Image (tube, rainbow, N blue to C red; front, side, top):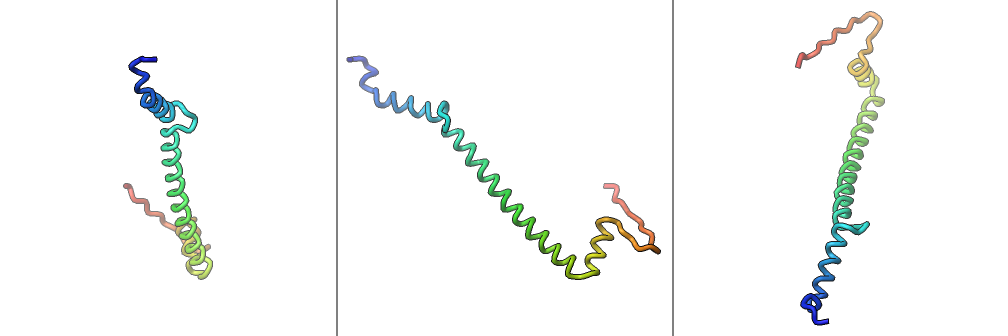
Length: 94
């Protein structure tokens, strides 16, 4: 047991352990970094959806709170019209 590598056995085993944990293990460091990135993306998506929900609630409150706003929304969005009206849609070429 007088091999030169045997003097550095702790360093060798620690190095092999790090290589194993970085690349080959089921819960490797690279996999954990990837999962952390996905979690941050999903949390950002949650915040975006919460903001969108708040905007839609405010829009619903504005629409159903006033009959004129509801009529304006229906005319602009769904191109609804009254019986004696004509609608002209102007499209921007850009």
